[in-house]
Length: 68
Image (cartoon, rainbow, N blue to C red; front, side):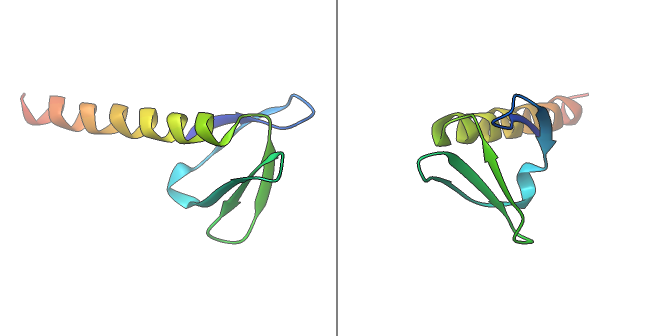
């Protein structure tokens, strides 16, 4: 799950597992696998970075559990 910001400043969470496309038109549009679209303030690069960081945290937690 990642936090993103609508153009009006409202923050919300998107399930990053359901992101299909992130594109700039010029605003950043996130399209989910069900076809829903969200326009956000973050750049494409920022959205990608948020997803990568989220997945790193998930995998780091998994590896920590394996070592116990």
